[in-house]
Length: 596
Image (cartoon, rainbow, N blue to C red; front, side):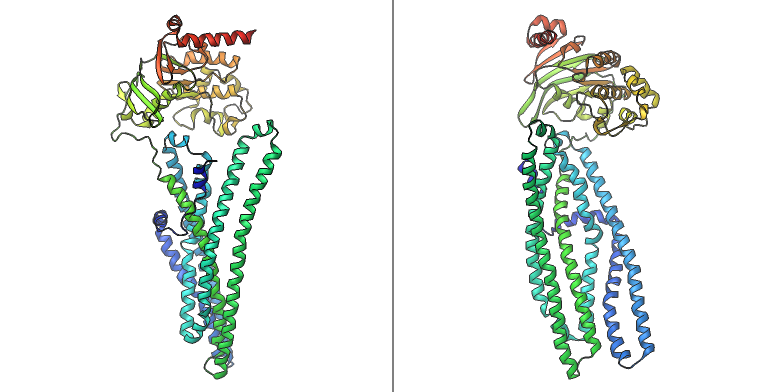
């Protein structure tokens, strides 16, 4: 795992960052009426709790002391009514805050997925997929509590404390000061706890990132682990990392285990001070028993939101770390930008021209150097060369997965940078060596859920490429379930489906990137027949290691170290006895060795 990967996943940031919070509140803004309503409910529900000790004070001093049963009954009804009203308001408050949280998460998660789809392939080249999945799932979920219970419910705790202060000082100023004498110790303890909790949270995140990284890497490379009998060694390493994670969590729990009992202890000390000071005042006749009862209840009630605010701090800290990672992703603008006024192609013919094209994945490390060639509509050209010569790079820049550094690429005489990306790619289909199939069924993997592609068109495409034979043998035929990445199908079957997919979209330009290299001999024979039908009326670019598959190409371009070294048809290039001839001789000898 790289240092960059660790640093991003373990980012802690501030416990409260006004800049991040301002951005987060934008997602709440469309639902501000829910927030205002929830805050109003919070004010009311926060008052209903503190009002009960005051009613107790009235019951003791005015009715119990004077044996007024009717008055006591009235107080009982009021107490029950306040509890019932608080329960009803609390229900609506919980419902609306959770509704607000889920709506906000929906918007944020949708924005993240939409943004990821717009990013250029250059971004995915250097970003682990697991990190992106974590942003859209775990990190968004971490904001759930902030949106649903953090932002709004923090008002509840603050209002409860304010209401308690109000009632206490209204009843007896001096006793209120005695009760709050433990507050400086509580504030100091809370700040100390916050510091320690923050440090332990960072350690937990660090060890969790190590654990996730190790798990992901070794599950992905399980075949290597097993073939070299490394199970025991890897188990020991994993156990050590897992143990470090456990110890970090225990350390985190330790601080909570110290803090909460400390709050309870201070609460008990406050009650003791109330009884000591208030009892003396009662003896002197300057305080009533009802006020003493009310203060004891207020003290127990006061420390509850203090504990809740500590939990809110933990929620806030997690949310700030997650939001920082999310916004770092959303602020990434590694995009292939469209022209402001894109040119729309009408009646695409499929002519392609590269004019002095230079391209580098990394600055100044050019993989294509001064590439120039043209393809007439309906022509098939093949591109060959050693690994790393730049064959696939030509495909990547033609489809605008990457933008070129210098030069021009034209389709029907129009620079592709002046076209809309979606419009450009609508006229191009690709068949790759590593076929990607989605979870779903055979039909959905051919039409990619495009309603414009009819069932008849799917059937025709599968017949042309010869995929209909094995599909008809499947239990559910075209509705047969396809597992993730096509795990239930053979390599050859997946390749045939990808050919059917390319044909179903009826492109003017077809790209075959080593599309037959993973096919068995029988499937290759079917594919060769299919390709012959597939190429009719289409411009095609074929990249192949097997030179036997491209001998009928109209033109063959030989790349070497990013430069075009030879151009011609099969026979012309053999006569030159250059790079192509050497490649052909090497493959011919390999075939002779295999045959013998």
